[in-house]
Image (tube, rainbow, N blue to C red; front, side, top):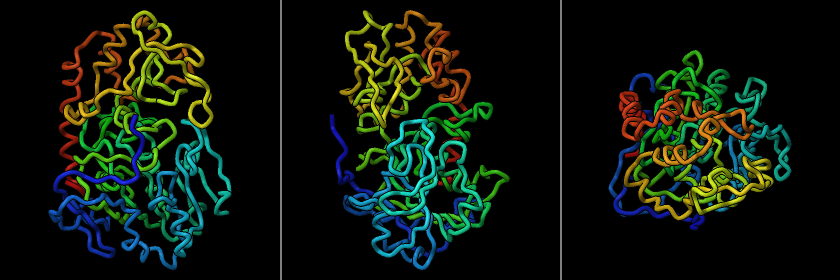
Amino acid sequence: MKLFSKLIYPLGLCMLAVQACGASPKPADAAAQSNSSVKADSLKKPAEEILTGAAQTEKYLPLLRGKRVGMVVNPTSVIGKMTAVDSLIKVGVNIVKIFGPEHGFRGDASAGITVNDAIDEKTGIKAISLYGKHTTPGAEDLSDIDIMVFDIQDVGVRFYTYINTLQHVMQGCAENNKELLILDRPNPNGFYIDGPILDPKLVSGVGLKPIPIVHGLTVGEYAQMLNGEGWLNNKAQCKITIITVANYTHDMAYELPVKPSPNLNTQQSILLYPTLCLFEGTYLSQGRGTQFPFTVLGAPKLKGKYDFSFTPKSIKGMAETPLHQDQECYGLDLRNYDISNIRKDKTLNIKWLIELYKAYPDKADFFDTKLSKQMGNIDKLSGVYTLKQQIIAGKSEKEIRASWEPGLSHYKEIRRKYLLYP
């Protein structure tokens, strides 16, 4: 299985989107006028290396000089081979506080585990957790900070919690009159938009806003949407500056240089994640407790239905108590699934959910969250009450997908207002 490469070279002609520091904003509509983000003139160029916002230090170091800086970061926050925190300290940036999302600043906490505040051993800087009960930085957290920096790699999926962290940080900055500098990064699943729109009655830690499962936005674009749609509490507006990704379009294949979280450890898992994470709302293992999570599906009771099997084990930092621990699970091996199909079809694969429900012998158990604390709620993950009902009722993929309209098409229209990249 292919692991993460260090340098990514896009294919074909690409559009260069850059932002000059201090340029005047060109908002998509009046609601976005407080943003200082800029979608600069695009130029057709030969294929070049994608440059993340963080890598373009010449564009944002002038904004940090002489200021007390807070950084919202995790292990994906890299400049070259070095963490952004270490790199910026090296050139004299005064980082006074670090804020970490789910999995912590150093990325060594398992999914869903509360991370406590601490002093980062390497830098001696105070690290504050924004996952658990304390999600929004408050006045005390921000009192000694002049500007916040958000630099975290997202994977473009509603239930991946880093966009929730972004929203909470924007809320805290807006309420305390702090500017937020966003160092944008490509979205590896940014080439499509799919899934039902979140029902407001199902707002939870795995879904806060009415967007589809696969939202097709970078973090910078989503920040503009949060401001532009008035989605922060009390319709607060966060002053944001976005350093855009150079040489990037949404349709480009992008392979991450660093795994975005412990259980997304291959490119295969990142592209299968939008579909396979839905199985966290079922009594099937998605491979947590193996070295290949989110590339396999199975359960002990599928023995005899499928030949392939795997056995989840306790793995520190990945899955200490995985579903079906130490039990042989039978099901689908998707480690060699041709992920070019995802780029071609640009859809979630509901067929696997339909197939495995039909194959499961005890159908009453399939979505029963009482069976394990390791199971999630399928309604909250999908964002709608109907998907579970449709699977149980034996609806076809075509019928299920039709129920996502007109919400999905309406979202695509909203999305266009906030795009920074072709």
